Length: 241
Ligand code: CMP
Image 1 (cartoon, rainbow, N blue to C red):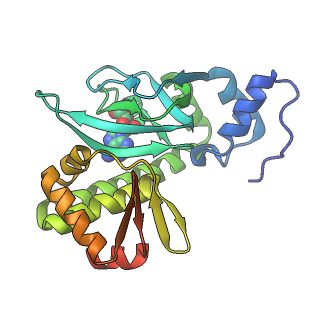
Image 2: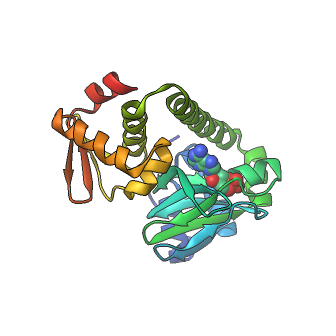
């Protein structure tokens, strides 16, 4: 449904602004203006500095978050403090839905990797919304299905592929999460640290460095400072996925 572009006159200006943001979020794209206004009234906007911990794995969870601006990483850590990045989420993505749906502890920690602004909706309000507006529940399921597909691809890569395949899979995952595509070329700004890439690919920093340089030599990738470029995304995907 197309929403009218005029904001609700009954809402204060900052809520009007929040409504403009929220209407772009895919899980809320199919709801009418009154329902949208209801969400905006019950939600809270929160700002986080780069590096802030937004959610901690194992804590209990009572809210869902929508990213209005910025980027977060979803991480799991072991007892020695080593962490693996499961995903990087950015504007219009949401997180925190798992605890809300199953009532268990947070499945992962969430850390701001840039200055980030979030819109927080309490569990009860979100559950009511899903009951009232089935399209929100369907959109949520669609996104969860996409995350499961990605996780399946990661499991396949980690279990069955050699080092080059695993590194390529991580590069393609980052391209999906935070890359910008133009004319078949994908740029990944602010590439995570080599140690992060190594943990994601289940390999060492040395292997990451060796494989990335091998890909550069073959003409698949370019590295400009902290920016990684996939020269021909479809070709690279076809070769290594
Ligand atoms: P929750 O378990 O409530 O808190 C941590 C959140 O991280 C979780 O909800 C999801 O929103 C998000 N999350 C966990 N695993 C993944 C993943 N593999 N990909 C993307 N997001 C995830």
